Image (tube, rainbow, N blue to C red; front, side):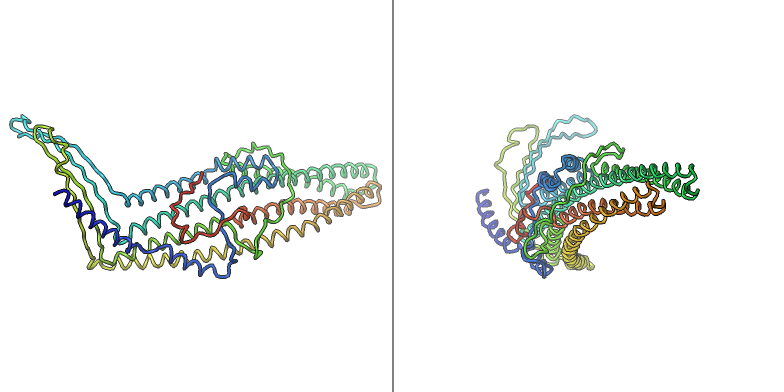
Length: 488
């Protein structure tokens, strides 16, 4: 009898599997068709870098500055930053959810052993003992395809969180680099203020000597005192700026801000513009675009599940069960002669639910449209960021030449002005004016040098990392990847 049940189970199971294959609707296909419309106008060689999770790739991006201290800080931040740790836990959570969803593809097996004894309360003899052994194996056939769509949604959700994690890593690395160079800039500005203070002190000593000799009026002495005090105030402000920049860097590294970092680096020349393909303005490897694409696939897959709810729900179940019970003995308790195979098909239809199903479908459709529009805006924002980053980078590069010329000329003018003042052929006010121009020009040059580095980081981040290491966009054939590229 058991053999006949098994034979029937095989034939019915094959039919159910065929129905299941027919019921699996391609959730990824419509998502890619919708995304292709939103890519209209984007360069055809738009590619996306692989999300390998390898920290060495990110660290190597900043090796172009040839600064060992910066590389060490980036490495430390990628290991210790709390926001990054929170992001990786979200990836692990998505992995667990995918594992939970995919468990529906496999049969379940449960077993239990029990023992009990029952007696009347009057005598409490407990003479009869009852033993039980149960084994149940079940498999739910995904005839309608809702499990398949749920797996697609969970897989896309996992890959989306991996892309978000990758973006978080790159943002943290960029923040560390910006903070590091900000500290150096503030140190250079502090050094400039210290040199200005020394010049003010030298000038004030000359002014004091001339005043004591009666060769200048008191107003020049008072002006000298005011300028000296202003220079001392600038020192205090610059020192506070350095401490603030150091604390910002410590925070980015995942340390408690205590102003204990010793930065010994210098502002390097920014690297050249990252290489771009043709056409020139090519969006390369943007983790936020990757996340938006996978989010769309996830939403479309969940929408497919919602749209299956109004249809009659056809379910197929294969159950293999055994239930043995013995009294006062355990003999034959684990006998499998009573093993039975149960085959079941059920068809259920919701007649009235007050609009719950239709409301869920409408909400899912709205979510699908929302994801599509957000994806389109992500593309526009990414394109705009790259265009703006390139333009700003080139502008800062052009300005640097002019600022360097202005600073050199102002410093030469200052040198000549100090000589004339020391000889008594130039007034103190004229000297201060020339000195202010030279110091402002040098401060602007320092700020522009740091801005050029900062803008290179902005452009590098806007391009999604190293654009020379890229692969084609996700396609219908690659989207089935179940997120096996785990971050390290």
